[in-house]
Image (cartoon, rainbow, N blue to C red):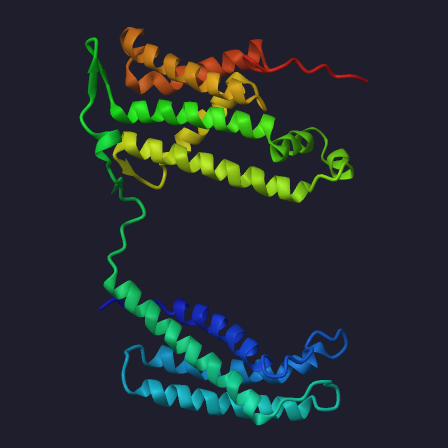
Length: 319
């Protein structure tokens, strides 16, 4: 059986402590945030939950197996935690604004130790019976017959269905993104925020909401790109997005930073350059092993001779 590491006990102990504190503070909903006495008010609950969890940690580090001692550990933890909480309640009685009875302290201690045990047992069962893949192992990507079946032959040219899916997804995403940014209120607000967030805020635009929408939109587009790459590679691994991210940045710079059309054109140009370098450059500098090199060579040339990108507007610095 899998030997659960000791650090998991501490992790579940922290969560159980927080849960016990919240459970003890629920009855009556007392104000435990007074700036002067908040720690004196919280001390009994923290002591009750912490004492119960501390005893549970000691017992679980000594006995890892699941046996009849579980009930004894839970009861003993609840009793010890309640006594510690009561002792702290007496010691801070003069400075505390909120006072807890033994029943409330018992709820905090019992909830903490029960939560710790349940979480630890569930996690132990999960890691024991679930076969976790290696972090460095490639995992087969789900294949769909419509987009990953037999390649199509058109006029003597073989086209992979995954490539058709990628191009179709590119066209649809570009059109939808253009419509969203140029024809919707949120999209226009996004343009305003990108140009001058302070002025946009003064015009009544919720800048924070626009930023959240922009990040969510980027995540959706990244998910579509990930599905496309998974269909082309037939498997996924932990580092598959590193080179793709570099090339996405390269395509954005190639087309012009901030220009949606430029990013699309830059990606297409980058793909064509890689394909032509693979097929038509002879000798040791050609072939698939050198396609990434030529892609970044194009990037360097664009940065040197046209830093604003292929479709980017020239920015004039004014004094």
